Image (cartoon, rainbow, N blue to C red; front, side):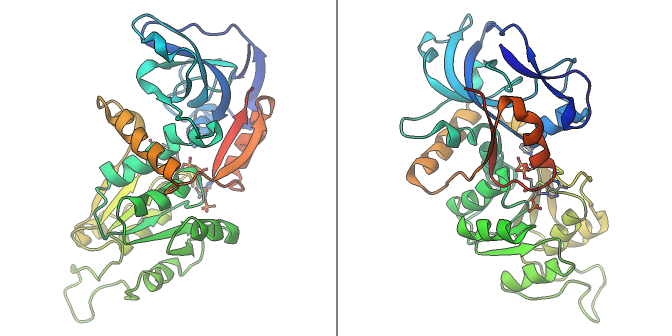
Length: 342
Ligand SMILES: NC(=O)c1ccc[n+]([C@@H]2O[C@H](COP(=O)([O-])OP(=O)(O)OC[C@H]3O[C@@H](n4cnc5c(N)ncnc54)[C@H](OP(=O)(O)O)[C@@H]3O)[C@@H](O)[C@H]2O)c1
């Protein structure tokens, strides 16, 4: 079969299309004939060598794939064979890939595979980070970073579906902010602007400036505007999210660092504002028995009733995985990037 492989870690050019033997499903596994592979930031991390999941080389990237189940291993319900599925797995950039049976998500009739493929990683991360990591409550004001990206574009909509009163999108280019508004964000702010925090304060209603209360105790926090922030960008953006958070109850969920920098976490600001900063890792949450099935069922329901829609991003053939990675890394893409395998 054809498979993209990384022989040595590095830039996008290290992705090579090879002819290799197809994998076989072991006990508890299913073999998927891959039609589309999702392209995720984690694939970039694996290719570049800084992601802990890289394993031994040569290896096939791709943490997400969708297609039909071709065969199952021992201990797996045979009724999966022939069903259309999407799954989080290893080695998705190939004509065949093996997934743990408990990672299979059946694609409901009427939902396109090109939309369902946005569920296993980006959709479940957006849902899990907001609901389980960030404990989104009815009436919350929520900030979403990278709001036109794969996780962000779903998070803006999921925040509303979970009961947020106001969802504000943080995004770079003007067309990305326009997309976020089109998805239902109440406001969109360019967080590359120097005064982006002031802009967020203005659009979320309070307009109050940060800093110590004049004449007051310098360890007292100024008012904040955001109950919850989803941070997939990190770097200095995280410091701004801290300053915007509502004292005592504000939560920041960090899911990643698309900017390439670690979160700029000013612990003194954290203390002063009595905030909660928490991490969210999808693979770790998905270890909880039943979590993935419940979360995927909820999200697939919202995709079917239109409460959440997938923004389809650029599509590349398998032999152009290099270009797919470039599009993620140069920040030009929006929505869900896929590789068309069959
Ligand atoms: N914890 C988990 O389990 C988990 C699961 C999936 C994803 N993630 C993480 O979540 C984050 C978002 O993932 P995604 O799949 O939504 O990625 P994506 O589609 O590429 O979106 C990421 C967004 O980050 C913004 N960004 C800011 N600085 C950037 C830079 N230097 N290079 C590239 N993008 C930059 C871009 O928006 P602007 O141009 O508008 O700023 C981009 O749209 C990533 O950090 C990813 O690793 C975590």
